[in-house]
Image 1 (cartoon, rainbow, N blue to C red):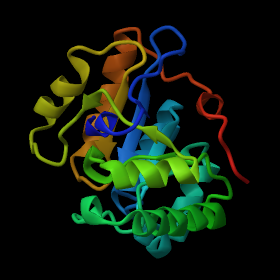
Image 2: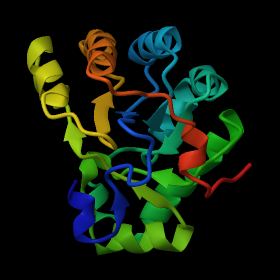
Image 3: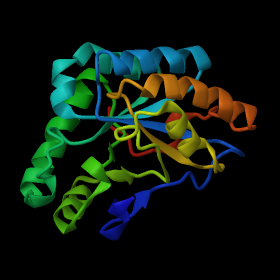
Image 4: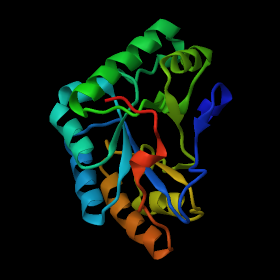
Length: 209
């Protein structure tokens, strides 16, 4: 993840149970994709982190509440997820984070102060804003490219072929193909001896209620 260039980010679970992996989803909440993914996670008893865009939380507050009520973490992915985030001032970035933080607290009722930069890219301004606001940056070490590839088997192979304990998987709950990939991935990973049986809240103690 490119965020490591300017600031420290968690890109693998360093102290996890044997063969545990973590699922993360970016760019929601989405009324179709997120709902389908929540159904699959519930069916298979898997918890995940959802990096949500503030403007979408505003549009779908009930779905945001559902994510949290089902035991997942709602985390910060900026308010606008703008292509111009890399050009924002420190104050503008702090505004983006604070607006989203307020929405997370309002609708999810709890914040873990976790942040993932849009596109995984950062710069000194983003790094300064993140530090001043006290966020933990969560990256990934396994990228699905589900926003690019239209082939389910290619995506599934990409995220499963070299799976290791502690991997953090990047997926998107806004992409139509992702739910079908997810369902097969969970089964495949478990068949390989990996587990999602993790107390996700215990991973991060920087919480606000």
